Amino acid sequence: MKVLIIGKNGQLGQSIKKIISLGNIKDEYSFVGRSELDLGDSENITTYFNQSKFNIVINCVAYTAVDKAESEHGLSNQVNHLAVKQIAEIAKQQGAKLIHISTDYVFDGKNYKPYTEDDKTNPQNIYGSTKLAGEKSIQEVMTTDATIIRTGWLYSEFGNNFVKTMLKLGFDNKEIKVIFDQIGTPTYASDLAQAIIDIIQSNQLQNKKQLTQIFHYSNEGICSWYDFAKSIFDIEKIACKAVPIESKEWKMPAKRPYYTVLNKNKFKTTFEVEAPYWRESLQVCLKHIKPSGE
Image (cartoon, rainbow, N blue to C red):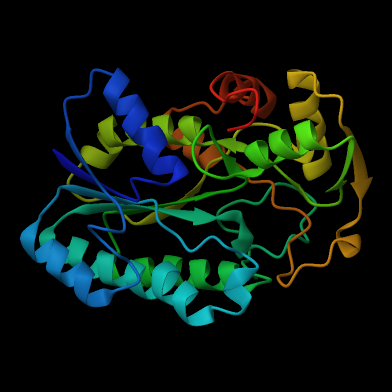
């Protein structure tokens, strides 16, 4: 099968590429970045797919600058919604299966237990709203052959992310303030990448017609941003002190949900894939990052 990964320079795209390079994978993978396929340009999307056809399209791209999205609604909507709808239309026309990565920010964070795929969505910011619009457009265009995977708190040895930011701040400061009242689950991009590859190789996806569905995936467990930061410092033996603060003490343009833990039972039972515990995966990731956090 010919598989296209959109977003080769992102955390997830690079993680998939790394696993493919190390594994014994029979499928033919192609990786494209913004220079080849710009989701901010609808004409570019049309031109690219007129020249190329695939059996499976995996969209790892999103406008993820949560605060910036509040003032760049148009670009966020183009990348997270309109481009997604266009890709879904093309996938349907070409008879390709689509795997699309979405976010835990489609929820309002008012739950008291992990969110299931059937729980009511209610995004609290532009980023979450445009990502939800992208999900809905896929469901409207493709009633079959699309898989939407919601995840959250993604980090890796690639690109910019919370782990790398904490490492840098930890080495440069004696004390930093970290929010403690936003609760979720960190997701190591390599674990999600492996899960996606497992899905591609599973019998469920290779069947001719499957109803379009939403799934949740993250690592196992639960923590706050404060717990996450403190674990990074503890594992790396960084002397910097993490000081817990409330969200209201850290003024941000975009409102964040307080609780976005995801229930992964549907994903695990459908695809027979396990999710590692978040702290164990963090330890694995930190081994791949230079001590300076670079």
